[in-house]
Amino acid sequence: MSQQFSLFARMGKDLPLSILHELTCELKVSRVMTTEITTLPSTASMQEVKELLRSHRISGIPIVDEETLVGVVSVEDLILALEQHALDTPVSRFMTPQVLTAHPEEPVFEALKQLERQGIGRLLVLDEDGKLAGILTKGDIMLGLLGALQQAYDRVERLGRERQPRYFFEALVSDETSLILSYHVRPNDFTQGGRASAQVKKALLQIGATPQLSRRVAIAAYEAEINLIIHTDDGGHIVVKIQPEKITVVAHDTGPGIANVELARQPGYTTASETAREMGFGAGMGLTNIERCTDEMHIWSAIGSGTRIEMIFYVPPEESA
Ligand SMILES: Nc1ncnc2c1ncn2[C@@H]1O[C@H](COP(=O)(O)OP(=O)(O)OP(=O)(O)O)[C@@H](O)[C@H]1O
Ligand SMILES: [Mg+2]
Image (cartoon, rainbow, N blue to C red; front, side, top):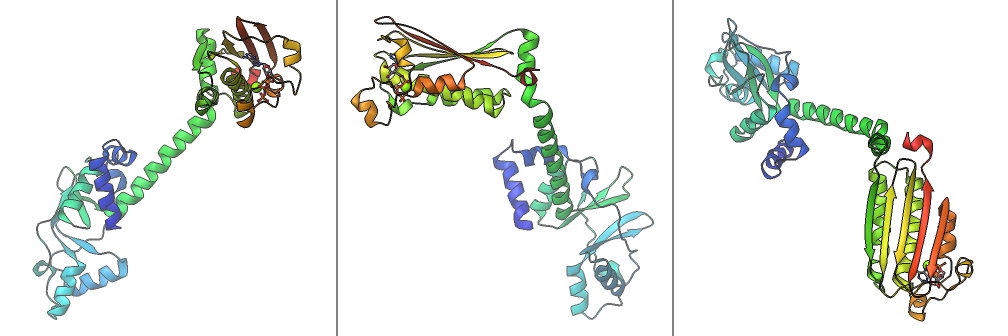
């Protein structure tokens, strides 16, 4: 356990923005300390200390005289008393009078630093009047942090379930704006093939489109992107316009154009080069695949001037709501 805690302390130092660091700064000592405290007066014998430590399975006892903390006695002190056969002597002889304390309103992070620095297992928590309010051990901090982490996780998960999927589409509705994503696709650059469509998919998922819709858009955009790579001389652009009710993907280029669009749309028709075929393209199925994924597909093309393919996807009402 102590090793894990020095890890926490190190995380606090090296990664100042880690969630654990944030939580240890936010969490107050009073939230995690143990308030059920077993105490003894300084007149109690070491024999009583031994019995109390064993019966309560604890490792230290605060010594309190008339509501004032006067020291703390630990297992180590008991071992010393046992070695000296001094179990009948009063606790005041073996206790440590200088007690390290914490304040209930102090952040757990400060208390943790003190525990680490002093190499001790517990801090006694004193309230404003100097009265004992609780005990803070590393175990208490661990449990408190786990609870706080769980709460933070639940919050994020709830947010993700309830709000995120509709979040951006709602924003689009209220602003009546659209979001435009634009990508340049280079010719013959197979190493970058699929980069634009992968980014489109990521963006759609991030703004809350369903995985199904995001996948349909991404597949169609991918086929159009590869066509720009393998069939054009100068590459082209993929432009995605996201509106509350529909997503429009346009792939356009400036050449060489398609001689017979109707023919090109037929499954299996291809003019792909030998190189492209060797790379696994050229089955003549790209446009067919786009048609399958879209709600509407329009192609304009002219030899020598270029090709424009428009792909429309309607956003199901429950998604844009
Ligand atoms: N942007 C474009 N510019 C010029 N020709 C194109 C363009 N896109 C498609 N074509 C023509 O249309 C044909 C059919 O395209 P499609 O995407 O269906 O198949 P493919 O690209 O040949 O093979 P696959 O997509 O299965 O790898 C292409 O072979 C090509 O002749
Ligand atoms: Mg193709």
